[in-house]
Image (cartoon, rainbow, N blue to C red; front, side, top):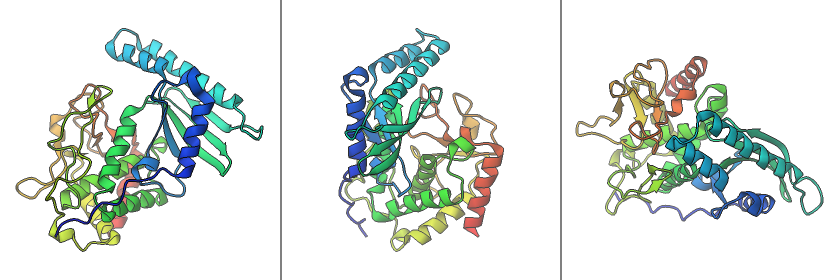
Length: 334
């Protein structure tokens, strides 16, 4: 049967809009470029929960220039690190001095993380409706694009969005969704959900056969939704979220992570009905390791292994964290 029509486009919550305006006013022309402040993450992808913070990407021309110089090889790694620190600490100082309309502090608990892969400032915005935790990163256009890709997948059907939300909530409840503590990020869990849904036929591969869209030097093209005539696999037509989640656990409980990595860019099924995946024997550059046997390797949809800057989202996982992830999946599959 044809797939149900996708839900309407998301409307940003009043909270994210208010935060966006507050940050724009606080930083203004002293820091921000023409692109200003963009919402990304779960607030954009329709996958936010009550405990989700708000992610914002700040257009900072000085940082964009420093990053471009580093990527082109005209500046050293140390010079780029210095630029990251300067930007993060300057933005932090501006936020700490900012006052709300009532005269109180507009931002509290301001913490610069200058040397993260993408530097950011964590803070709490004291909005009229109550405090809101926020992550402010710099010129993270690819993260915005990643969130738009997850939005496109979550809009294929309510079942697809329901599974991704269920995976997020489950991984958080099992304490295996914190990259800073050696497990997988919430975003990585969503990619695992998309890859599984591609295999069982709940969603199509939205990156296949699409026009190139260059973002920060990467091909970040994808289709906004299924092509006309696409229909989900008949076997999953009657699935509810619980059934889909059970299948998710069984799929990854038996997935050969010692031989293959997860990649939503190539996800789906081959002519023999097996999941399309990337063979670890073909790896060996960038963030990917050829002989990883003990942990997951999950390819970023745009920063792929054959790109200028490959990104393996599993590289943050420690041995203890990976054991916890595998144990949680195993118990879910029982």
